[in-house]
Length: 88
Image (cartoon, rainbow, N blue to C red; front, side, top):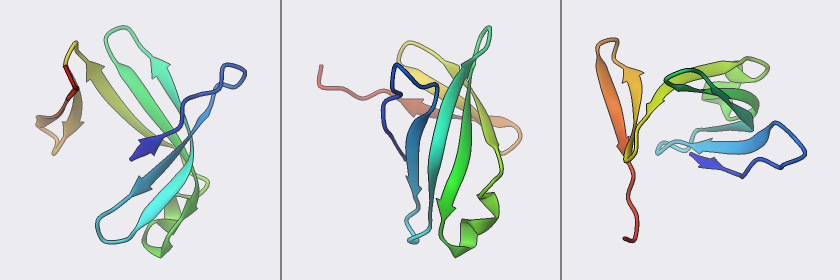
């Protein structure tokens, strides 16, 4: 998934989600900051056939953001963890 930086004059940025099987969807996104988490809200505008039903919908995912990782609720029970990797 790739994100373009949000423009200071607009509240929405652009995103593209490319799957390993060739599927994709893209559109605009915004980050909604809550007390202890961040909600990523996607507004899909384009998609390949298998994701066409997302166009015109709103996709929301809630994350807990830590210093070196981001945790996402997944599989109903466990948190998926995205770890920050950097050059130093």
